[in-house]
Length: 115
Image 1 (spheres, rainbow, N blue to C red):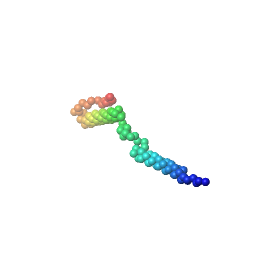
Image 2 (image 1 turned 30 degrees about the vertical axis):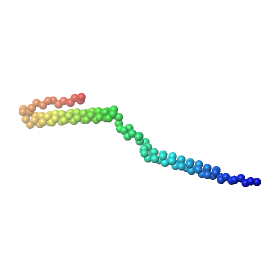
Image 3 (image 1 turned 90 degrees about the vertical axis):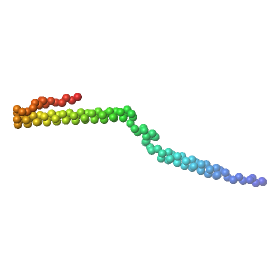
Image 4 (image 1 turned 30 degrees about the horizontal axis):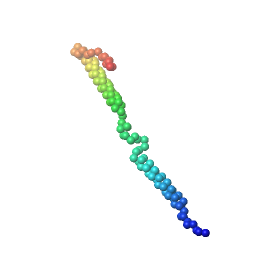
């Protein structure tokens, strides 16, 4: 009987080749995911301008600040006028007590109108 030439067992080399290809693919996918995460922080958008307020929001904020500033200025002005008026009345009261005939006329106290 003639002996058949024996072929080397290729099933082992094919299995090892498939295994190494699978490991290389897994390593490549894992590295690309890790690299992608390092370039973009989670939870933050790609475009940093997305964190800025809109033009409408900026206009509204500026308007509110101006109105508040105007309101404070108006209140300070009313307080100043009220203090001046109180000072005039205090001076007039002292004048009446010390020399009643020589006191200037002082307007009657009034409540400032709130506009």
